[in-house]
Structure formats: C-alpha cells, structure tokens
Length: 595
Ligand SMILES: Nc1ncnc2c1ncn2[C@@H]1O[C@H](COP(=O)(O)OP(=O)(O)OP(=O)(O)O)[C@@H](O)[C@H]1O
Image 1: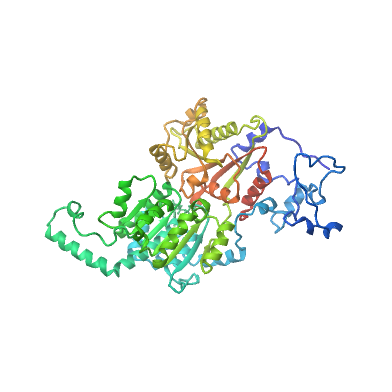
Image 2: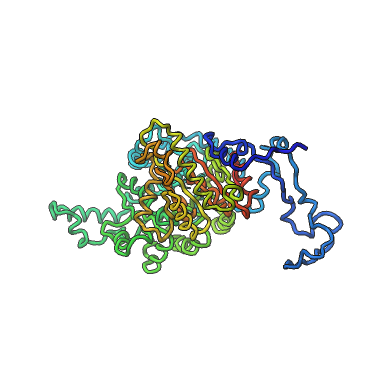
C-alpha cells in the first residue's frame, strides 16, 4: 500500500489561500472518506443481517459503566473503514452511487426534487427571452426597464422569473406551464423555489402589482372617490393637497391593502419595500413597510395615512398583532406572498404566519410561497394543507452554484490549536490582503472588501465581532442590540451593486500590520441576514459548521449572487462533522443538489 505524503499544516494553509484562488491540490481532489457509515444505519437492529435477525434485540441502557467487562471490541462489520484509493474515488465520482452523500443523507433536511422534472423545465425556460413576452401592463414593463433594472444592458428574465411570472399571470405562453384553475373559490396557490440571489423578489412582485393595477381599473368605489377628490382639488384651486386631505373623506384603501408580502426581518422589509417602491413610482400605487423597528406613529401613518395603502411589506408578528386589534386590515387581501417561506413556516414564525393566511383566505385570489430551500417539514406541511399547490422549481434548486468555491480550514491544527477566533481573524486578514494584491500595486485606491461571517448562535455574534475588532478588523455584529443606524449603514454598503473605493492604496493595505484597511465584516446568524441581497459580498466565512444543508445554502448564498463569483471558508473544529463538510464541498464541486 502506498502512503500519501504528509504535508505540514502551515503549507496547506498557505496553499489554501494562495493566489490560485483556493483551488489547491486538496481542494480539487477531496481525499477519500476513511470512515463510511453503514448503509443500513437507519434500519432497526432487528432487521440486520445474520442469525440474529429473528431475535428480539436486547435492550441496552447506556450509562457510565456500559463499556466495562467487554470481551470483544464492539465494532460492527459494516463499520469497517473503507480504504478506497484516490483512483477508486475518481472512478466513482459522477456515478449515481449510494456512496455519495451518505453523511448528508443521515441528516436529510431538504425535500428531494427529481432531476427528470428539472430537465423538462429547463427546456421550457428557453422559450422566454424577454420581459416583453409576458402579458404585463405596459406601465409595469416600463417600471422594470426604467426603474428596477435601470442601467442594465440586455435585460432578460432570470430562470425563476421565466417560469413564475407567466404562471402567476395565468398566461399560457409558449412555456406550456400548467395554467392553474384555482380551487372552488377561484384561489390559486403557488410555491416558487429557486436558488439564492436568483431574482425571486421580482418574480412575485411583478405579477402581484400587475394584478393590483388591473383590479384598480375595475374598482367602482375607488373610481367614485377619485372623481370626488378631483372635484375637491378644483374647488380648492391650487391649495396643496397635503394641507387639506386629512379633513377630506377617508381613502377607500386606508388600512385595507390588497397585496401583502410577509418577510422574516426588518432588514428584509426595507429591502423588498425599496424594490416595490421603484415599481410603484412608475405604476402609481402606494407601497408601505410595517416592521418592528418603526415607532407607533410611523406604523399608524403607514397604515391609516390619508392616501390609502395598496401593498404592505411586513413581518408576521407585527401584522398579526395589528390584525388582532383591527381585523379589517386583512379583510380585502387578494394576493398574499410569503417570502422566505422556509423560515416563516418554521416554528418561530409559523403561528403568526398561519394566522395571517387563515384570516386572508376569504378574499384571497393568490397565495404565493417563495423560498430558496424546501425543507422536508415545509414539504409535508404543504402536501397536507395545500395539496393542489403548483410548485415552480428551477433546475438548480438546492445546488450551490459552481461559481462559489468552498475552502476548509482545520482549526485543530497549528497554528490555531482549536482557537476558532484566531483562525477566523487569520482567514479575514488573508482575504483582505489577497484581494488588495489582486487589484495590482499600480492602483491608487483599492475596492473595499466585504466579508460575511456566519455563526450558529445569536449570542456568539458580538463575541466574534469584538475579537475581530481587537485584531484590527472593521467588524460589526448584526443582532437586535446593534445601533440601528450603524447596522443599516453597514448593510447598505454590503447590498450596493457598485464597487466602492476605500481610502487606502494597495501598498497601504499590504504593508499595514496592526489594522486591516479597506475590509468590512458583518458577523451574523443566517436568520438575521436571510434574503438580504448582499451583492457586494464575495467572501463568506462559516465560523461554525452549519447545522443543516439548508443553512449551508442560505449562508453561502450571500456570496455569488446573480451570476457573480464567490468564495466560502468553513472553519472545522474537533467536534464538527467533517464528513458533512466534505460532502457539501464535493456536491458543490460537482454542481449537484444538496440533500
Ligand atoms: N432579470 C434580472 N436581471 C438582472 N438582475 C436581476 C434580475 N432580476 C433580479 N435581479 C437582481 O438580482 C438580485 C437578487 O435578487 P433577489 O434579492 O430577488 O434574489 P432572491 O432570489 O430573492 O434571493 P434570496 O433567496 O437570497 O432571497 C437583485 O439585486 C436584483 O436586482
């Protein structure tokens, strides 16, 4: 048997962060797994092989003395290490083999979507080339081109938009997407599932606003109100409307929105509101945000303001509590969108979300759930509650794009000795310096590098941010107690689509020893930043190994958005599931969906 040469750890680290962009020998060819878990680990002991198959298994009570007095090593045959060679590994790669994703399979959190179904969808998508092919009102098309995607050349719908917009519009198009008739009440239910950063927001906002505008044209009450308003304007000859509108009769849409978009966080309320307002500006509808960060006065004026409200973007908790005191708020909703449905229908939010779904049901025409991941729990819930829901899934759902690379840092080795904080700071310093180096020494100013660090527990965010600050890194923790202004300033720079120049030159950055100029870091849990459109982020550090593949997808999804390239670094410690990390890395390399 040939032995593999052992490389000193610091050499591996250097290689890992070398200019070749993490594509080191180890990276390109993951070592074979030395310990392969039993294929039948999920089955009960009674059904395992051999003569013991018929016997009832003896009940074993685990306790401090269980391992004593054993005369044989308690190693199952099936747990024997698999000494697969690299050649075996290379041969097996790509084969649809049960060996793949074993560790992930044990954790299986995501619902599986057949590749057969994805293939046929891919063919249908090719039939759509432009937003003009959708049966949208001209004013909505203009809003997309002139406001939302302003400045972009060759504007094309993204895969999820190609599939979802015609379906939500009830348009047959060439796409042959099944036109949903709706149930007895005429209500339609959709699930939009597509990768992170793939343009889901527009995919649901555009058809909802289009429907809103069509309904508005048929609304007799609104037409009569507008007529009276025009007469009043004439009567008051030139007096600014803002001065007298409060005293005029209440707007028919006051506190009676027709479209509601639910999102999990205040940051997402702001983000989705900003996109909706860009369309609203051209289309002339009233879009208002409702989130816990607003004071009571602002919430009151957003909901009960004299100009009415058409579309509300809200967090479920706040909206559910408003609906408790004023049930009419949800009495006229025709379109309900649940963005980040995997979070909003999970334990912490589901009570309020379901309350809102139930209350809007009588008037609801379209229910749209939107998510980058479909956890099995959500899948089961939808199966039971909405058996006729039309599922629109893109071909790459649950796969982390190949343009995002994943590097692994072993924190148990020198020089880190299990100290994750030092490893994290080291990774950030390396990224900061490497990025400056890549920009070239001739540059006067270097672009600011934005890095997101993800931890599993909210409590750790501040601890990690403080440590990074002590190491000269400009880091901020994203949690409830961070001053709102600082938080929103930092988020604004992370979500900007244009690169921003820092004050330092390349030489300054490379020579600096005490602080890392031109680098900004946000430390967060993925829940705090779920859905945030961090276009400026190219690097993500997974300080903790995520608990599930769902978290892997959402966290790595903050980088490499909308076709951009990205890099992730996962810090792996003594107690972390290396097998899971290795399999995620392998599936990313092969462009396969995670399980
Ligand atoms: N057709 C398009 N062409 C180019 N860019 C687009 C298009 N549609 C949307 N975008 C841009 O893509 C980015 C990501 O969109 P969006 O935030 O809707 O992604 P998402 O799918 O909701 O991601 P997540 O799952 O992380 O919430 C935004 O900056 C948006 O402006």
